[in-house]
Image 1: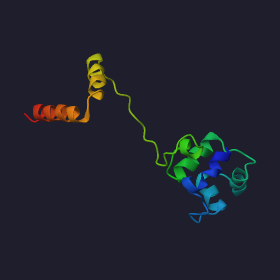
Image 2 (image 1 turned 180 degrees about the vertical axis):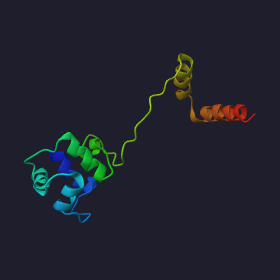
Image 3 (image 1 turned 45 degrees about the vertical axis):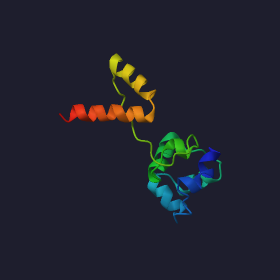
Image 4 (image 1 turned 90 degrees about the vertical axis):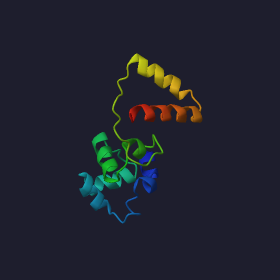
Length: 114
C-alpha cells in the first residue's frame, strides 16, 4: 500500500489541493487518525475506503494502488455479443492497412445512407 501514498501527487495530494486530513476523512467516512495512519504506512485502507478515495479524487482504485498509470476514471465496458460472422469480419478488418480501413468505411457510409 506504500504505492497509494507515493502516488498522492498524481492521485490528488490533499496538501496540493489544500485538503486537510480532517476534510478528507470526513469526505470518505473515516477518522482523521485513519488518514494519518494511511499516510504513515501503519495501516492499509480496506477496499471500501480505497473506493471512496478513488471516487473523491475522481480516479480508479487501480490508479490509487499503482496498477495503472491511467489517471482518469475507468469506464464500465459493456460486453459485445458478436456472431461468429461478425467476429470473423472484425478479425479480418483489424489486419487491414489504414487506407484499406478507410475504403471499408466509405463503402459502409455509402450503403447506410441509401
